[in-house]
Image (cartoon, rainbow, N blue to C red):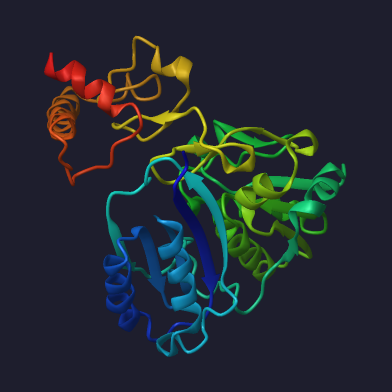
Length: 321
């Protein structure tokens, strides 16, 4: 039974006092036993929270109506899904230079941004042969799913995306360019950068892949595969149901059920994506760390060093044999 409400949100808004918001938000979440991560920066807020439905609803009411926030978040939109277990173990409110790290000063969706496209209109836009469709996520996310025909920029971090624009997209400044990402935040900031660089027709999927999977019926969907998420669910499918992927502890790459069966997969140590890359020193380190995590889990305790994915209870029993 799915009893934990997981809520993902972001909002670009000028927060000159963002450092003063960290403590009260952390305190509210701790009191309500909410788990997850929130990032605060001068440019806004970005977060994913999970807990009982009542407390998550209470958080959104708090952040939208409490005088402390001076109506800064009154228009904040969130995307909700359900999980059988809380996908987070801790609550963190962190201060950052950017709520999504692009690394280019002066770029702000608060000042200028591309054209929002609702999930219901997305299929028509990306089916146009004159539209260039770009997945702004990183390679390991794209590996497990993307929109049909979308271009993979082959970036390892979002900070590499500006270089991709300069090298690959500048000759297409006058074409329609449609971008998308998990929740909408990366592609929204990317459109702001592209407008600064002189692009004319820049579009982005409002609410991101998660909103698309939530609203567009599967029989009409152009999405292929699963969507990577940054919590213990690892991936979700249509209707935001938990997917079949797990994750490698060593390199963090998502793993399909078949990849978990690979002889190169050693729980918490290596997988087909990092087996030939990890050093013996690193391997010894992660083996010991993983052992401590699994022993703690088997005792019913929480090892605070790393979160545990859905197969770890079974693996803990193997360690204890």
